[in-house]
Amino acid sequence: MENGARSAGTYTLLVTTTMLMAGLMAGLMAGLAPPAQAGTVVDTLYFTTFGGGENIWQSTATYTGNGNAGNGTFTVTTPTGIAQTPGADGIVENPNNGQLLVGGQNTGSIYQVNPTNGGYTTLNAGMNTYEITVGPNGNHVWGGGSEGSATTITAVPLNPIGGAPNVVSVSSANNGVTHITFVPGQPAGMAFYTDGTDGGVGNFGTINLATGVTTALLTNVPYAHGMVYDPFTGDLILAGGDTIAQISPTGAVLSTLALTPGQELDQGAVTGNGQLYWADNTGSLVFVDYANTGLIGASTNFVSDTYFINSLDDIAPLVGSGGTNNVPEPATLGLLGAGVVVLGALRRRAA
Image 1 (cartoon, rainbow, N blue to C red):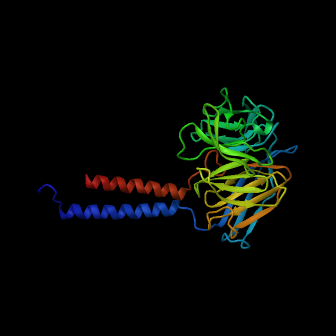
Image 2 (cartoon, helix red, strand yellow):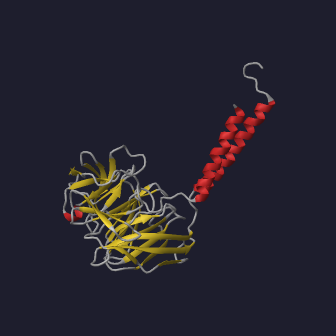
Image 3 (cartoon, one colour):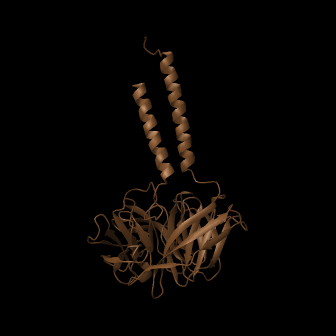
């Protein structure tokens, strides 16, 4: 066969391979792509309260609707107490063992809580730690302490767990950090931060985790307390006071949602499919479905803002770092496995 020539059999195989791969990828993307609207959403929420007695809880939230204002229902089951730790604020999941991690407030500790029996162990945080975030590699949980007037951040080892914390002083644009959030594509060792206290007014920007040097992108905004990365939009969701804001990683304010004056929005979670839950220290649980619009503050979004439980503090993330829903669905795993098998067979046939 001359150079550059191709037999009919080889051509047929290549066409068939290309078509099969295209169909496989289309099916794979269809299985992974977020829905255009919500339909029914059911999530188990883990959260903290800052009042006495039980302070770590779980409940099940259910939303049925099409994403439009005035259409659908949102309900939450009566909270079930999990544990009582000496202090409780931020809450995430340890991706290495499935247990909960809880910021210990003014105790100088982070607590690892077994969600099944409520037992807990104490981790040395090296400082009073409030909001916490699991790093993208799952090896550390990061904490800030500006709610307790700390001018440091801490990284507590998770893998292996229980080692000495690394405490770093914060400096430059701001000398305190409330919340740390990681975004895909950021340089290693960099993260976003907020520094607002419970009222929410403060600054937002980037922080070098090794040096503690901060660079402000937004200053004196009313929603710089809680923060989460939203994979649905590729933006950051910030909240504080009575306002939720959608911010691009470059610091552009894309959309805001103003709620009832006097609320104290703390920390929340996104589903990754265009919905969010947010805790209000005055006791309300906020739910927003923005799947149809992609904008937190769109007037057509379904919004629920109703009383839930006294002293509501933080909600554990559902997706991303420390997310409690980070388990691939069996159907998705099966599809991925089928794809690997088929592509492997095609490569062997073409060899």
